[in-house]
Structure formats: C-alpha cells, structure tokens
Amino acid sequence: MIAIVESRADSASEHICQHLRECADWTELIDDDRPDEDGGGTYHRTDSFELRSFDELHIDLERPAEAFDGDPDLLVFASRHAGDTGALLTGHFTGNFGPAEFGGDDHALAETAPNALARLLEAFETHAPKNYDVGMECTHHGPTDVGCPSLFAELGSDEPQWNDPEGARAVAQAILELGAVERSAAAGGTAAGDTSEGGTAGDGCVAPHRERQVVGFGGNHYVPRYQRIVEGTPWAVGHIASAWALDDMGDPDEYPDVIEAAFDTSGADLAVLEGTWPDLERVIEDLGYEIVSETWLREVGDRSLELVRAVESELGPVESGIRFGDRRVSLEDGQVTLEAGNANLEESNEGDSEDDDANGEAFSIVDLPAALLDTAESIDPERVRQCVEATTVAFATENGGSRVGSTAAVPSEGVPSTLIESLAEVLEEKYDRVRLEDDAVVAEERAFDPDLAAEAGVPEGPKFGALANGSPVTVDGKAINPEEVRADRTDRFPV
Image (cartoon, rainbow, N blue to C red; front, side):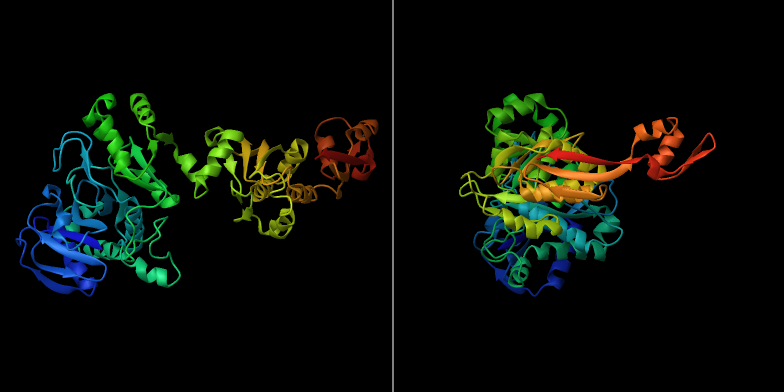
C-alpha cells in the first residue's frame, strides 16, 4: 500500500490532493483514534492508496507512516516546490547530511525509494503540461524519520503553479501511476512481486527499490547527471549529497556514519561522484563501497555484475575503453544467449553454438585479426562496430572509444567464425572478389598501380589522383586511360 500525505499548511499539497480525490475512486473512512490534525478524522482509501491529511508542514512530521493502516510500502509527500525555477514538476528524497535547518534531525537521512522515484519522474514526463519542466533534486530538508521508504512529489515553483489545475492534476496523475503497475502487469508488464527495474511490490504497487541502485555525491541542487542515469539506464539513484550538502556535513572523516547511512538507506553499494572529492573517496572506499562513473553504469546496463567483474579483470576496465557486446554468457555453465545485434548476423550466430561452451569457460580473451579489422574499418566503421558488438561479450576500443581495439572477450575458444565472415562481407564493398580460407581472408581487386602510372610518364600529383579515381588524363599530348595503369592486386588478411 502507498501512503499519501497531504499538508493543510501547504496550498499546493491541498490542490494536488484535491485532484487525487477526483482522479480515482476512493472510499471515505473515519479514524476516531487519531486527532484530525495528525492524520485522523476523515481519510480516503483505494486498493493501492491511503490518503491522510495533517496540519503541519511535511518537513516537520515525525514517523507519519504510523498514522496509516498497516505498514505502507511507500509514502509520498504531495508538496509544493519553491524556487526560481519556473513551472517545474520535481521529486527527491529527504534528509540532512549536515545540520537540520528545515525539519528532521542533524546528520540523518530518511529511507529512500529509488525505483519509485524513477517511476514518478517517468510519469511526470507523461503528464506534465507543455510549459512544465521535469526535474530531480538532491537530498534535502526533513523529515528524516518517516517509518517507511518515502519521497517528495512536488509542484513548483511559485503561487501561479501551486494554483494551476493542470499542474496539480499532473502531479496527482503521476502519483496514481505508482499504483497503476498492477494493471500494466496484467496486460503483460512486470509481474507483481518483481523488484527489478520498474518492478512491483506484492500488492501491485510500485516497489520502492530495484536491483540496481547507486548513491550520488557532488553536483548542484538540481541534479541533471543523476537524472540522466535514472532516465537513460537500468540504474536508479538513491540519496544525492550535493556539493553544498557535503560542505554542510564537514570533514568526511568525522562523519563516516552519515556516508554509510546514505548507502544503507538507499539499498546501494555503488556511488557516482560529480567533482573531485579525494577525502570523501577515501572514506567511501574504506567503508567497503565502490565508486563508478556514469559511463560505467551506461556500459554495464543490465548485464550480470559477476560477468562484468570477470571481463574487467581479464580484459580491462570500462574506464580504459572496454565496451560490451551483445553476447551474454553465464559464468556457471558457459551458455550463450544472443540478446540483440545486427539482424543480418542472427542466423549465422546460431552456428557457433557448438563451440560456445567448448572450453568450459564463460568466455575467452582473443586477439582480433588486426589487418582485417583495420581495412574493414576504413571501408565502413559503423558496420564493423555492429559486427564486433554482435559477436563478442566485450571488446577493447581505441581513439576515445571510436574505433575497435585489438582484443575481445568471446564466448568460444577463438575468434568467432561469424565475425570473420561479417568482416569479409564488409571487404566486398571495396574488393572485386573476397574468399575465406582456413587461415586468412583473401581479397582481390583490379586497382590503380602507381608504378605503372609512373612508367607511363604520369607525374605524381593531381593526375595521379584522377587516374586512381577512374578518370583519364593527358600527359605530353598523350591520353592515358585508367585501365592502362591498373593491375591485379591480392591482399591476404591472416585470421
């Protein structure tokens, strides 16, 4: 069940909750056991939600989850957002890395709901009126003791927006979508109980957490880098300590418990840092957590972390240019699944299945055929990249990741035959004839021969270029046709 908190001290909260009551079929109930000002009195329920009203501002509430029936899986504070940010729908978690100035306790953090926040931002994008932006903020203000995972869903950033029916309705609709996954699961979406990306809790409501979550440190109050991670990768983000919050906290060596709490309350053991924080990095690593980059998260995606660690150990780290291919292997049995890739390769990839677990290992490291690869890249680099991605577990890159490197992890004992065949097909764009031999790709062409051109008296320079491009030239009154300075050439590319 998802608990929703309305604050009567917040006009935007009241406006959002007005639309919440209009947008769903609620049952009106009476709670005579709690004071009206503390969530008692009249409240509302659906199968997925319970909505209660409080007199105090959200930031000053203590353990509001206890006002709700049962144990909420998630609590959403429907709230205003104040700032010089124009029309904005935003979400964030609560807590104080430093002293508490606006609710909550000093150096205390509430339990986050990274998966739910990711789903909320997605719903904001769906329902936001045309003139509204969607944002994500760092962790700030109270409450710090909620009683269950929680988040703020906010309408901003000033009176015109707080009173805007379209904005308030958009926030209400986005909140309700956190309970709508039960219907999408029945229609073929994520099954109830799944807590992976976009998963649900047992009652069909969105799950607070997912398998892949990180903590953020550094950056500004509004966090575009972490929002990119949430919107563009399978990873969700829990607490985010902005630069100003880290400054408020003080020396990381004096507050390792706060740093550890950021991981504990976010269900994460990885961190992404924005900016340079050497003392913080040392404390994070001393606590046993790992620092990764946005690039690492994007490249790893939803791949097995056990496989990723093995690849980085054997082939090299993502930060040095290692990129992952489309082949997925199990470290337990060496089985291979082709997740995606060049559609033209799918049929031929099936032919490698007999060799995929021949050596009993999940993958092996091989040297790619350098001359063949370089020549093929000079012809069609994009197609070559697709060929390599479709046939490897991972591969090295060069030139800032723009070119394929010399080594790869493959799901067999040697360079996949399908990769050789695919690269040979690329050569056919340039060469007249291409054939595969046991130990080489042999390519033949009839091409411009500079020695023959020199013998015919053609000076080096523009006329050389014209003949090479197939245009006739005249030298000392004599016409020279391109065919006169062509010769058969055979290139052999060892594999």
